[in-house]
Amino acid sequence: MKKEIVIGSSLIFIIDQISKYLMERFFKNKVLVIIPNLFNIDFTYNRGGAFSILNDQIILLIVATIVCLFVLVKISKEVEPSIPKTFMFSLLYGGVIGNLFDRVFFYSVRDFLDFKFFDYHFPTFNVADMAIVLGMFLLIIELLRKSEKHAKDNC
Image (cartoon, rainbow, N blue to C red):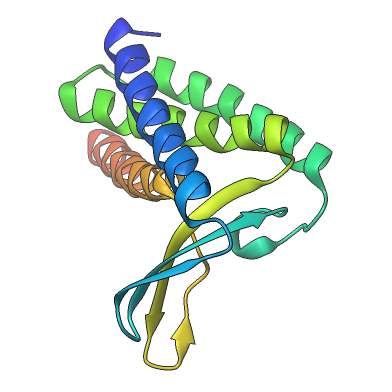
């Protein structure tokens, strides 16, 4: 793995862990209303995966995360290096490792960003989740571009 990806993913991991520590320290058992009826800081422990699926299946989630990391390593070796791709893999590795760290050491993922849109209450999330979502979005775009280029080259 390129050292730039290691540095970038380490930075994402550190930001994630510091934010989780601070939110747990100062907002555990409290809700801080930032924008009424829209955004709160509400610290919670998520013992499941995204949207709390597979609740209390920590071992399964840890194994699935490790498999995901191996897949990411394989994909990252097949992609031509560039600054946007380094950014993309930094987000993915940093976010995945941040939530894996929580599962291994806290048996849950620490979440604190709480959004409501009209009558919809979005699941609480954290910095690692944001990094994973943005990284996956960029990875999907990259894979679609690669597929499109491959299709054009074969015509």
